[in-house]
Length: 206
Figure 1 (cartoon, rainbow, N blue to C red):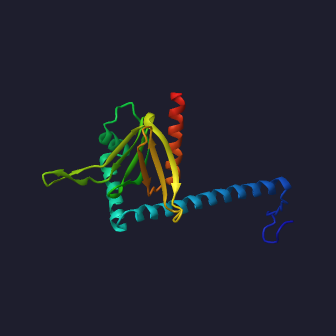
Figure 2: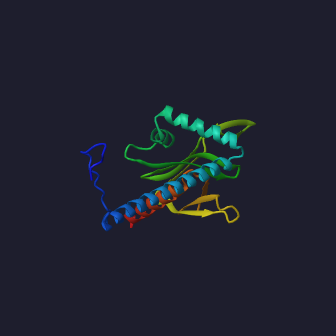
Figure 3: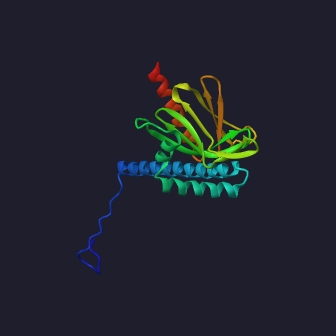
């Protein structure tokens, strides 16, 4: 029916068919799932970041340290270059992932980066730590751990029963040396990729 204002305008209402309605419902359902997943990931990241900062003796120092580490990564050309310098990695060894976390030590948690390469799992502290060198001298050194993948027995996730937000990864070597990592910003990703790397490497060796 033409409108009085414009005889050339001809409204043409369309009744949505059952298939079109179903398409819209499906699209909204997919969108809802994506939003839900994005919200869950954002909440996990927020919780993990807070837990990461809480793991240190001082939240303020941890925040400042993490900012300083980010600046260092940018200045030195990224995680890959820092990893190669820290562990003298050969050209054919490729860095797969890196994760900000803490390593549990007898002196307390040490903030640093966990590196996962095609050949090893390694950790290096963000800052050098002091130690007694004898003769009353104090020296400084980065705290490093490196386990070749063929010497890694397991990478097991766990959490505190009293505080479920406190999550850990236990690395166990073939000769039963164990290392506890905590305060991950991306905990689920770290567990997933560590276990995939371990499974894949052992499968190739079988």
